[in-house]
Image (cartoon, rainbow, N blue to C red):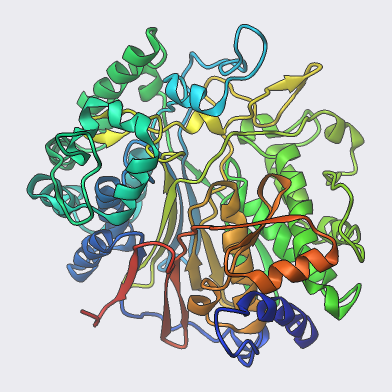
Length: 583
């Protein structure tokens, strides 16, 4: 990234910052002077969406645990105190940097569809797709949870402390009680269907009203489950009591054998190869499919870099928005579970490589003109027109309710992990004291058109496409200098992309960049966060139609340069970040 390009994107920053801070000038150095050698060790760091989860992770790291050990503790506490967003009844994607091997690993713990799922699982008798809430409440949206299996695999490979030592904080908080979080109270007041589940009574008073902020909440079922999980291991989830509890609850809801022990026994987490693009001396890395987040994020960053200033220095905002629109068009056409992405001529891995190649993205960037495009079409990454004609665009229900945390241990191992139950309170059902996911509504609503399938069509054994976008940025020596991610449904990609570009291209501290108003384009609609009136006005002047509304990202992470740590905790949510030596 050259100085001219950095200055160009600074104009976007200046507009976005108006109304939030008096000095909008960018004075910090650009990316090419922000890639020093990373020290071999730094104090431990943990950033997560709730202070109690941060405390749990910190206790593990202070005891000499690894980043993966801490991730188990953090995720288990989040499932207790932030059940509307993530938990052990859902799935996750984890990027893990192994400092001893200098290796970056992508762990896929995405939920998997049971054998009973067909492409028409959410199609009604009249041929029309179910409405979103109808699909959620049907019980058919529950996938086999993957978070526990993924954490178990990562722990077996990179854990330091015994598995049984990682659940103490979660069990104690569940049994002794924890203060009712404000976000849990407010979300309960908006999602009333969840209150009908018998186990949800722990969050309500005698009149069925959500408990107020600070009230003591106890979850004995969760305490018992975590105690069993500590003693028996992940098998509890896939062949034991927890699996049976989930199966019984789902099949009770559907009135048929929707999910079985065979479905749980068939689940396996997958180790995949992280995908990366080079920006000057840095490499930006994220998850491959079935997450769409990595491909789309990397496309946005590469296309912006390729197009920045090509039209006019005044058009940096337009170039950023158009790059985002183009990337989302490819996302809808090509991405899904890798088992359905390829063709006879092209594997899924080859397609991802093509979609993120310099040549393809430079060509795509040429589509960015001097005004908003009337319409944006998917590209043709392989030069094979048949591939483009052999897919229809996906239209998943995907809504925002997710969580992200980032961890670094004393040895320099790093975790960047995003987890989810899909919508707030998932399927609106609980089992074993935890919320059950509704991730299967992340499949395309319409599985095919005129015999042409969607890459993200439902199917037995498939994993639905996700927008979760855990990220690490590696310096020129291949060591992580940034870990970040966010919740937010299809807006996750924009929540991560813009602050990350701001940081890498202009030198703005990441902790400051995340506080600037968001600009996202999920589902083709341009949305500017409330408070960003100046950037909204600039976008309107360019000819865009847009919405202005609240956008509640949850960006948690850190940067490390020359041993200097910048802790990142999104002011829009209730989480925090800590490093060794802080109280």
